[in-house]
Figure 1 (cartoon, rainbow, N blue to C red):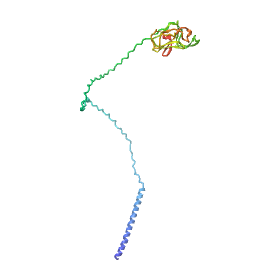
Figure 2 (figure 1 turned 120 degrees about the horizontal axis):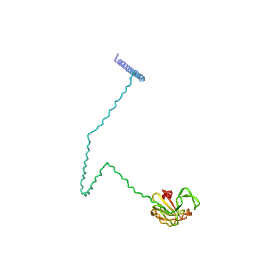
Figure 3 (figure 1 turned 90 degrees about the horizontal axis):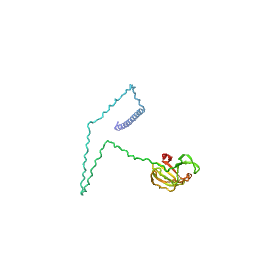
Figure 4 (figure 1 turned 30 degrees about the vertical axis):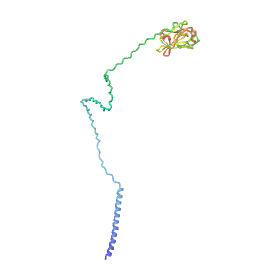
Length: 263
């Protein structure tokens, strides 16, 4: 065979070898992919575990902690009084005026354990109130605020907040106790009326007096001082003639004048 035939034969076998090798590679890749797919789909078997008896449970008790011992330092601590150093300010070019001498420091009062005893304030002696009868005479009408009594002047039954003392017209009427004149007025029902405040809750009223009085509102008077005279100026008690209508109240409440006079 000549050289030309050899070259043709070698080219044919060379191209066939290339295709055979390529086929082998494709088959090998398919086999590897197949087995890989089977391996990913398979679920791995669980790992068998051996049954182990844990045995009885043992209790563990922690020992009680030992109490900590306090740390006590028996060496006393000495605190020294700090020393205060004066602050020295730089001198100015212009000399400042000399400071005024400081006043002598006063020592603070000594602290003692004694508790001061508070003495009670002195109690002023209260003099007893002197009470006298405002008019000498007979009582012709009594005190009655709980029951009705007959009024001869008006011809009806009504209460009576005082007592009526009958006397000759012009007989002096005096203050039953020391006090201050609250008012001197002309009442439409009771006539000329004087009211006295005795500054202890007691107030006395004197009515049916003559128009001329001996006192004015605001006057301070003593027990037994003349304030007016018995008259017949009360419209509602005119049937009694000349007399004194005497009434007493304690803290604004009417009381029996006979009790106030101690009779």
